[in-house]
Length: 281
Length: 281
Image: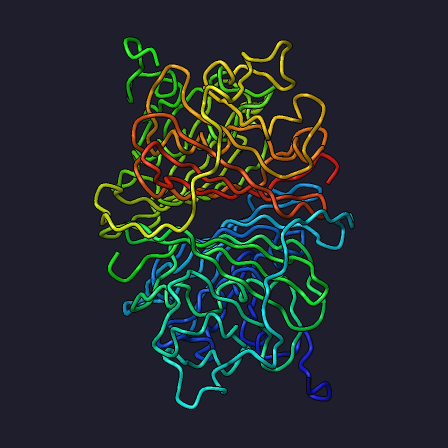
């Protein structure tokens, strides 16, 4: 809560590392920062935020309402180019497509991720809320645990952990102690380490930032994302977010991860679902 | 249960009405049948099955694993063309894109729906199942109710009802009697009226075939789909399906509809989520 040094939206690590530069109409250069890697891989949510920023530039509406991403090949830190297409523009919603490419050894573009997204204006939505979902029951943040609370490094600690404030519910941290609960659940308080408040773009990062539920189900190894669709439902209020991730159907070497993100005003601000593959799937 | 006249996969109304004809590599002609309309609109799940069939032709893998569809403009019965693109082919998964177009008054193509999809081979998946989700509690099919059980026509009855066997859980049919429960729930037994068994393509129809949960929440009017993503997790066993649809977050003029489809072997064969817009949203 170091208010004096809190980074602002538009002037933060996250904003600098998701910056895109117009090369020509619809085409944006970007630099994938090594600061958002997990083990060797660039975090999928960070990549999604980059694509989301480019589409926000390309489309007439400012905010991602629903973003569907299919992950094709593993991204590496370094230069990238995002090619966007305006598919349809309407009065309240517009739809676009974007692909993120990197460069192969021969200099040819290799596609990493392709997204379809529909944008709108969150501030133009009516105020009516009839949510029956309940915020996740997470203990107070001071009772939750992050990497810095561990006497030994938590498996999977990576560059990205320095940029995130993730405090896991102790009930979902058994995997880090060699005793996974067996339940497909992961819950945490979430923020950006430099204190930047959440916005729709950072929510795209948030939905894919927690350790995979597979860890709590006792699975070894990574669970690469095949597809991730995120609905941004409300502009988040300032303050820490609560994230709950649930897996109910691990079968045939694939699993879904359903994420909910709640803000400090008890609004359900984002819902996402991804299809991921188990290592042996 | 008229076994003697049961239609077969590949030789049924659904198969004939989702047929696609190769025009040139990657481009398929189709005819949107008036038999799958709800009120005036062509059903979104039927359209998804058409796109899914074209992608199954275009991609090296046979089965849709995850299909993300963004709905752009309302489709009408009549001719259409589906243009596909192979985005990536891998050993176990391949990704493609497809758009369905119809023709404007000037003959120009108008895009109706765009999808990104990743395909694989359901029969190649390992048998391990660790699903913690439970099948929906739906009364026996003989206690559930369809359009033909109503003394008066059910509001919204349409051509599609003649092609589907939908028997709604009486607990979620209050809307048809002028007394919606207020809960965002819809549950039903589901099949094709000619007895054709389910397959991955017909599951794409199934996830968007029940009355909208909004009806049970007391909302008037239609709730057009903005985006619909479906995961096909298992080849369905023969016999009737159970479908459960849940809405937990109606806010700002939008709502999500989460569908689960269970087969007669108690396997969770499909999961989907759509973002829909309320009429006044």
